[in-house]
Each structure stands twice: as structure tokens, then as C-alpha cells.
Image (tube, rainbow, N blue to C red; front, side, top):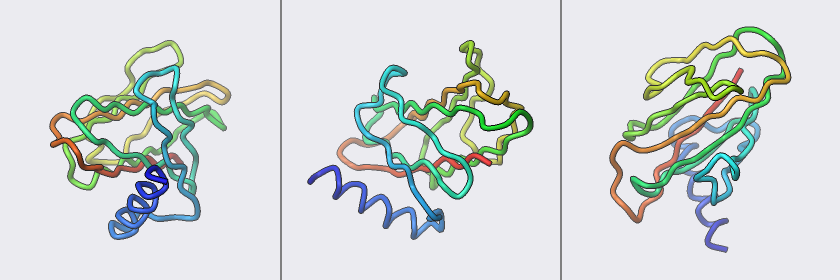
Length: 134
């Protein structure tokens, strides 16, 4: 019940920031390591997560649905979060706060890894973010 309450609160919070679309894939904890990563989604389906402490890290994986340029929007609602994007081989492709749209060339069928983490966050509160890939 507690998890559903968080999801509902996060959905309400994200709608206040104008980030709600047709479908949100909410993260499932634990996803603090690559082995328990959540699946990120494309287009109108965005990936919704939250960071609850400085030690909380969220891993996502995305399998590219086409070869070519992809736009990635990381909405962190002015929270001190960073996003790292890794290639299938583990090479860092992007690291930053997502203050602008990220454009990367991805290869169809290849799986890319996204890591969201905080640079500073008080504990005992859930700070929402979203990732949209087009």
C-alpha cells in the first residue's frame, strides 16, 4: 500500500510540473544496481522515478527501437540530480543535469543504461524526476 501511495503522490506531483502524458512507467524499488534496473520507455510513455536520499541511485535500461538520433529529456524539477547514460559496452555517453535536451545516436536492438543519482538531497522525502525518450 505504501508503494502505491508514493506512485500516486509522484503522479500528482509530476502533473503539477506538466510532465504527465499518456502513460508513466513508475520505477520499482530496489533498482539501485544494474541487475535490478527498470525498463525505460519511448515517446508518450515516460519513465517516472524518485530519489529519496543521497545514497539512492536509480538504474534504467532502454533497448533502442531504431538506429539514429534519439532525444532524451530528463526532468528533475530543479532538484540536484544527475543523469549518466552508458553504451551497451559500458562507455559513458553522457553525464550531466539534463538542463537541455540530450541528443544521442543509438543503435536498434542495443541496450543502453541510464543512472539517476543525487548530488545532495535531504532524507525522508521523495523527489520525483522523469525521463522521456523520443
